[in-house]
Length: 53
Image (cartoon, rainbow, N blue to C red; front, side, top):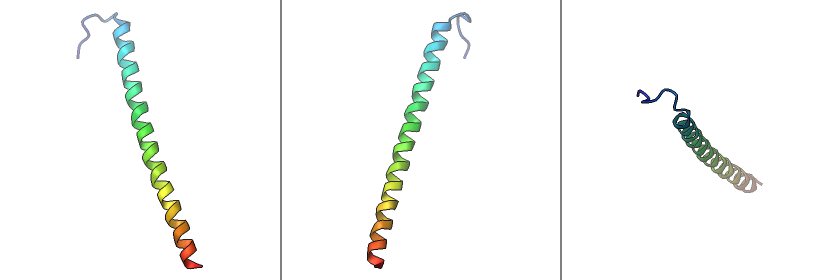
């Protein structure tokens, strides 16, 4: 997509900020899902360890 004004750095800055925000949101969501999955595995391991005793 061609820029109507190649010297329009304000538009480029907005695009960069938007892309950064999108990536940050995506990685935070992934981190939360991974953390929740890890917590579930830990809870399952504790439950299994108690049942084994």
